Structure formats: structure tokens, C-alpha cells
Image (cartoon, rainbow, N blue to C red; front, side, top):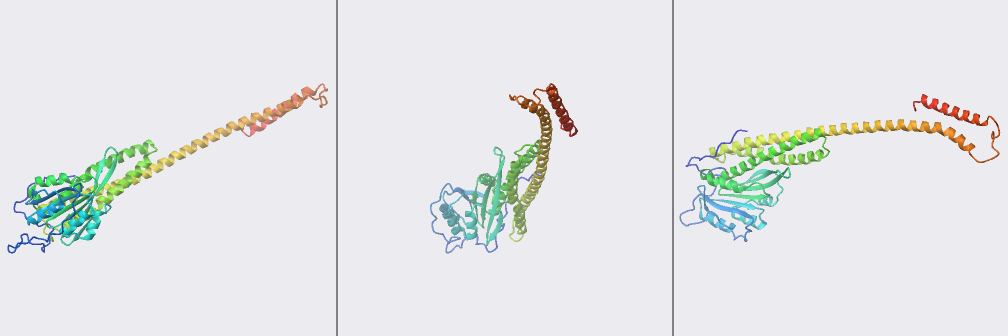
Amino acid sequence: MPERPDHGPTPSDAKRTGWRRTAAPPATPPANPPAAPRPAPPAPPPADHRSVVDSAVYRDGRRIASPITLADTFRQLREEPDGMAWIGLHRPTESELHSLAAEFNLHELAVEDALEAHQRPKLERYGSTLFVVLRAARYLDAQEEVEFGELHVFVGPDFLITVRHGAAPDLSRVRRRMEQTPELLSLGPEAALYAILDAVVDGYAPVVEGVQTDIDEIETEVFRGDPSVSRRIYELSRETVEFQRATRPLVGMLHSLMAGFAKYRTDEELQRYLRDVADHVTHTSERVDGFRQALTEILTVNATLVSQQQNAEMRALAEAGFEQNEEIKKISSWAAILFAPTLVGTIYGMNFESMPELGWTFGYPLAICLMGMVCISLYVIFKRRDWL
């Protein structure tokens, strides 16, 4: 993977054009009479400070205010016609999102999607506002599994709002990076959107390496005959499918953004950065597709090996049963041979006086000869049948 160029300073005279429409409100209000760029909405309800992770107003790429509440952010932005608001929320309440919708004229369908945490990655435009849904991922080494988060981004002419569901991604690092390069941040909310896209795609790299390591370990376990490997293959296959659903739509989303470069007059330097992100997400998507195919092949090989092992066990059981039958035949044959003299001896061992041949001189030798003849006859019969 080629190394990404360092985000160096852009030309100082770069204008914040990006994806704005030409019909956007004027940058400065009329001199007489003074008026705010937009009417002030009703004061929002008190915000839950745990939901507002960070809120700031920027001018020329530099932070000029750090309001605590959403109401303060709205007031600060109205006082700065050339400013940009970047509001970061984590699992906001419905009232907070509705106050943002009233202030920035957000579409009700986008707000409804932002309230729900299970959305597919997508990119939609509502007038001058861009709505983006991203699926971030991170690899947990201890559990050897992939954890997914969801991020909703509203991008307007002078604002960027992030609504995060889950632990990933860490947007505080993205904000610090952009604040360290004010020349890039001065390009407007679309530059901040690029940084978020870049952070989400960069977060896929450790996940790809972790999944690759798991696949290598699974291959070893399959050929070692580990009985628990089937469950691990199934769980990793599910994570790979989820990972594929997170990365594959990003390819089309970034191509849609690139298709609008000319229409929305996106800065040339920003275009290069977005193309770089698109290259990386394409490479990641291809590797994830390869993981799914590899797991399918591993599952097939494991099923074949398990079938062969079961056949071998069945063959061993059949051979053991055959040997057992041979032993039973031998035991039964000898038992039958010994049964004839035992029967004769048992009958003549009865204490009766009137029994045939008791007073005959040759009675005993005849009984012995009879028992011997029966034993020899049975032995010959069993021998011919290979029971002995």
C-alpha cells in the first residue's frame, strides 16, 4: 500500500467552496439593516453534556469558540457569518437532534436515520446538506473479534455535525489533526468530512491485519484436527460479512463524491486527498472479499477433513466389530464342543437306580467314545466354516 502524502499546507488564498451550491446564503449580512444569516430558532432544551462530546466554532480554520451547550454554539455561529461549526455528539437525545434540525434546516428523514443506530453506509444529499452514514470498525485483540460502530455525518455550507453510535471511530484525534492544519480546515466542512472518511478507512487497516492473522490460525487448526475450529470459522465468517457490508458501499460513495467535484467546485488539493482515500478503501474492500472467499474454501476443506475422519472412525469401528465377531465365533464353537460331553456327564450324574446301561460292562467306555465322537464332529464342522 503506498504511503499517504503528508497533509501539508494548502495555498493561503484557497476558498471554502467544496460541495456548496451557488444559491447558498451570502457570506456577510447586509449592512443596513443588520440581520442574522438565519432566524434564531426557539431555545433548545438543556443538552446532556455527555451527548455533546465537543462543539467548536472555527474561522479561517482556527478555533475561536468552544461552546458548552448547543444553544451557545448556535449563538456563536450566528455572530460569526464567516465561521463554521463542528459539533460532535455521542448517542444524542431526540430533543437535541430536533434542535439541530431546526437550527440548520436538516431534513426530517436524515434526522430519523440518525436516531436509529442500524443504518447501512450511504451518502444522500438534501438540498445544500450532505448526509453520510459510515460503519467504523476496530479489532479487539483480547477477544479476537471485530467491533463495529456507526457514524452519521451532516455536512452543510457552514456546519458539520457528527452523531456517533459506538466506540469507534475516535473523532477527537481527527479534530486535533485538523486543528493542527488550519490551512486544510479553512477549506470548510467538506475538508472535515474528508478527515473523518480518512480516519474511518485508516481504522480498517488493523482490522484487516487482525482478520488475516485469525485466518492463518484457523488454517493451522483445520489441518491439526481441532474440533472447535468449525465454530471459529462460522463466527469469523459472520464478522467478515459485516465487514464487507461496511466497506463495499464506501467505494461507490467516494466515487459519487468525486463525480461531483466539478459541480460543487471542490478544492483541487481536497480532490487529491479524496482520491487517495478512495484508493485505500478499494484496496480494503478487495482484501475483505478475498477473506470471505478464503473462509468459504477453508470451511469446505474442514468439512472434507471431518468427513474423512468420520469415515476412518467408522472403518475402525467396523474392523473392531469384525474382530469381535470372530472372537465370539471361536468362543461359541468351543462352548458347543464342550457342551456335548457336559450334557452326557450331567445326565449320568443323576442319582437314579433305573438308568440304561448302568449295569453294562461296556456302558462307560461307550459313553466316553460317544462324547469324543460328538466333540470331534463339531470341531470338524466349525473348522470347515472358519469359526476355529
